[in-house]
Length: 422
Picture 1: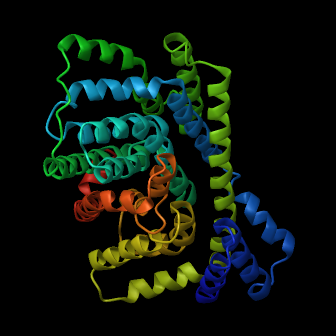
Picture 2: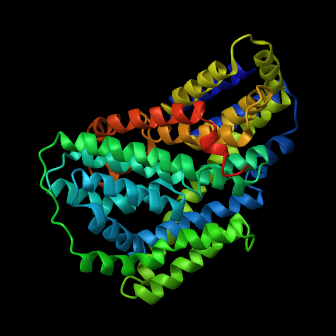
Picture 3: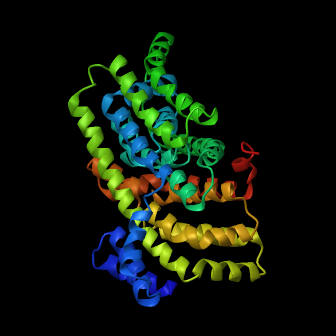
């Protein structure tokens, strides 16, 4: 039944159907033809997917990230990091990674991070002699940090699927996110040293301190949002709403010039479009995964895996390879909804921690963002800067290697993912 469902899904994709419709149709056909479920029950599965309180955090975090991008607060943060380390060897690409790490803690969205960081950093890097490939590759890769550094939209989706505390998953993602950022910075410096570039003029202590105080309100946002969650003042969903209010307040107080009706409309429209796409994917993918659940596919796979004589670490490695293969052809949201209902029970049967598996899953979803031919971050950079996709792909290859190494480290050193929550 799983094979038939995948065949229907890929046939629909080949003829040009959207991913959400391909998933929904294949799941609906399986439920109607093979499981004899009534149409009302089948259609209701599409709506049930989005009927979860925690998922309400997605549009709020997206809106907060878009507001920071359009209101200029993101540029202030980027300016501070640039003043601080931009003059060092490989400093500009390293600054792009650090800025993406901070912005990831503000928006939770890879797309918002890529656009915000890339709009300011890529032109400056190219002007200083960095190649287009390296400039765009490092931004596309660093933008994926928004999925690991909390708050993360993919963490919210994963937590809602497996019924675990998303606040714990947020906490678990901090150290892995910093480890990945460090590997990307090292890679950026190594790649940049091979290029003949000009050094950015070293900023004075006065310029650094001035840019810090200008950026301070936006830099405090992760403290407000995550601090509020872990101190119990508000839930993750409420924290998402608070982040929107916080951005509006600091934009009104410190960026009055950018606080315009036009910029607010841009932010709202962009957030609504992205939210709609995510929710459609959630609905279609839930129909597909529900069909497999009704057919007891996860239970059968769990039983099969538990009978294997292979060591658990090797099975986990094969699961990660499966994630990477899916990531070459699908976006992260459908990957999560297709695979997690099937693989999660099997992984738990192997004795793995659900939080550790969640971190590994998110790391693979990060990789899927820059894996050709269907890497979302690659397309965002290519489309936004009107550059050939091949240029962005070539530039992202060294950073793709760094992400793969980071994922292996997280697999074999589970302590990195769990010690903050123990």
